[in-house]
Image 1: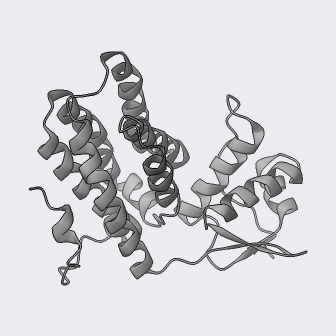
Image 2: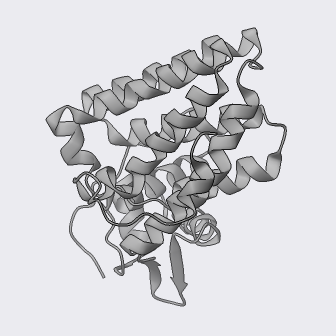
Length: 239
């Protein structure tokens, strides 16, 4: 059980307390601030967040449903461990889902939705520039969910958002400190440009490449190792 200070994000006042605590804890798990395999108590996490234990327990139950933690009766919550193979498989599934989705919605984004999407894209860039990775992850999660909503497929939105939340980006802080994350963040604007222009193939290619960083560069801090790719990746290559 941990007693050391925990680097958790700030609570967002414009959300319900449960949702805000869930976001903060999810981001801490993704970034590796809450260690995989380690047991945490609700009171310790609540103290770090400056809230009572009740919303933390509620948030942890939500995260258990997402596969991020396991409830240990009368003890607390253990962070689910993810191997490199787990992350690679997860990313391939996201590429298979989100690549064709971007191709499908290209040229079909309502004009009235663009300002909000541009604002989100800029918030992601600013989070990367300022090193505010909790804000970066919140913006990234909402941005991609908003885009996928334009497919009209709620199950697709729910599944891809769930998979995104299970990602581990242990190297993200190092990449932000080196300035390399800003370039990747800018790709959210580039993706919008392709979608507005109706260029489905460019949007497909960009999102597949962008998602590939999740289980490779962002999780390890290293570029792809040149190992033999999965045959599944042939399915996500632009036609």
